[in-house]
Image 1: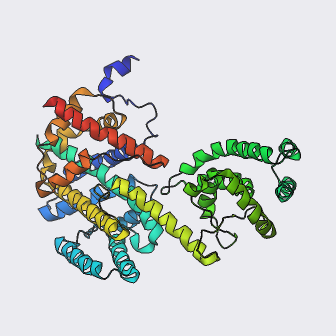
Image 2: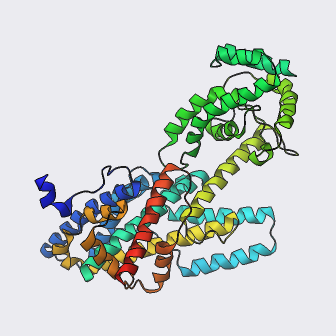
Length: 173
Length: 297
């Protein structure tokens, strides 16, 4: 009891810390990421690395923490495999740049003119392929699985963003 | 008319779970007792109702399958019951559909028509379905008007319904999906959203790598406790406010607008448990952050 009062700040408020999946993910994520960053910091001072590889390492750690914190989902296992096998590639593909998005939207407008079912089916398939590329492990899933996994992926991405934002915030201010 | 119904029920009793008192109810007068039967089954189905709201994604397939085995006995009364068992039977299509014979039921709206018409249909389809009843785990559905009843198209339709259900769930997650209609547009929105999220994560990690050298002292403060306070909604005065104060001013260049839509959008709660949890607590997070911000202002 006394300890609780003394360490009031560090006390866990929730009585059932594992019940809320959001909090669970966030807690895991932070617990993975923070020590990793500390380690990177310590290693950086010892070994001389240029800024780009340092960025890559940080990115790798960020992705790794992400994959490790969401073990229940198929995409996280795929992501983990990817990370472990090729640790220094640019893994999260942000290659679909604004130009591709424009291209897709112009195609869509063309498609709307003749709106047969076939055309629409083709449009949907195109988009599903895009989605497959975005989701880690998407190539091996069929349509239903993709739709199921994408919901959880999006929520975890949002949570990850909150964590990263607040880490950056705390350290810039 | 009633005889065939009684015949079916007697058959059921031979199979499994129908209790003798149940039959006794039916042993007497026909029509009124049928209504009592329906309410009887309806009561039982109420608890099964709760299993209807199982999440479509996530690891919950096992529990749902457990429900299926429990409800299998009720599939024998599909035509008589109210909408509950039909929803369950629709959900039970997770089973290998090659095994089951089905005819698809009318939508729940149509059921709200008179019970008498339902009974009329009961009797019509009874003779047909009784010949088709072979195993207890068959799903009986009634075909919609003007639609094919062969196996493949039914399977197709079930698959399509599953997909549209998932799309609806995604609509709740992704902000801005409500205005767009049609699968293609929604998929577009989803793709854009995922891409923007990924880009933001990359940007943030780059920023993190820039400021990383200064991380040492602050990181200990930034432990999990803060985020737990977030998500349990309890006020943890100092740390939370310090985060909130800086949020609005955080310059995430042109992606700032997206962030605000994420932070300020409210979403309807879906019925699945994973989603209700994440959604309602995520909603509370958003409203909390917004209200905190305004209180600080």
